Image (cartoon, rainbow, N blue to C red; front, side, top):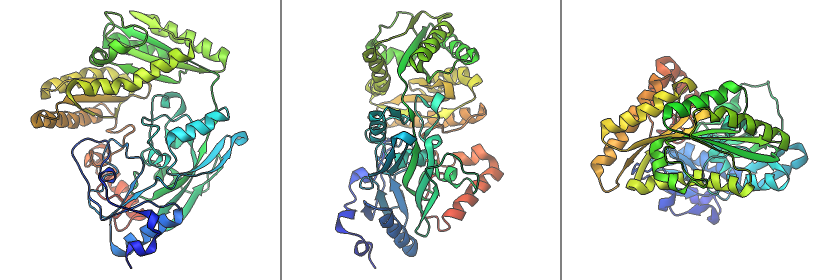
Length: 448
């Protein structure tokens, strides 16, 4: 029986370009025989059963905001989008929990929580487009993961469809569960290779009464990273610890809302949050920790100023793109005592490959976005930027880190897991894939 005969007409869509690529930007364009937009978990199960019976690859797609090619259907087959699976099934503000379908956007979850005085802390980029199912499948992070953790830490239960097309429910509206193997954590971060997440129970917390950023500016990376180390050693727990290196500041510093000092060549952004008294106490301690050797310390108080800061920080990526027209920005993570090495060696890698280089990112997690710029009109420069990224992956492993802190392996980093895990660890990884997906039809070629 044809797939179209098993689904309502509104669940079928033409294989338009928007379903065949993501934001990876490596020129990889997928292909699809069918695009299906299910509205229920049962329709997802129907599609998977058909794919398993007919040996057809199946690639899940959320909002298409991924940066590693995880949602690109490189082997053709069926693309399954989740934008119609977008209901909030249950919201219990007094119990700090929400049950949402996979296609609900991050921004909608945050908005509904905020309207009841609650917070869903994970804050990956592109919140208006990124979907909860995709964020869970990549275990997405964000600036405030330092204090609050990545997406998976806020998931207490999952509904998923697993081969050959069965709906399973793992966990639920519960905070503890020591009964089974941790199947929830296996599905979190699995990038659609083990099963397709259709709904999730999310844990919420009361929203902080006050958020107070504290920004330190320094003459060089050594002084800035020393300030990060002082923050960590102080025992204070900020909500975020970010850094932007001198090259990045040279591109976006002119728009910095509080005025960039002439000799400011490295920025550390921290934030205190919580009840009013607690936030003010933590902010004062952050000012003290960041003040030593700083050329300036800024501590905005007004909510509008706080919003301006984070808006500027989010827009910095556009300033990077404006320099050459193209940028490859990776997401390695390293032990915190190796931040200096990443900041320095990112520039050295760029110099060796003849492309502009910079770094920024979630310093408190050691999750750094080393970035290499290129002109899309210069294929040779683009290839050199890509080669620089692969040397960066080698650097991350040499420093005892990982090739992905938040974007995932996807298509871009295929082959890197074997280097990171070693032969025996990688064999276990493949056995897990085989146990869930014995025909290898779910998102083939990814997470390898």
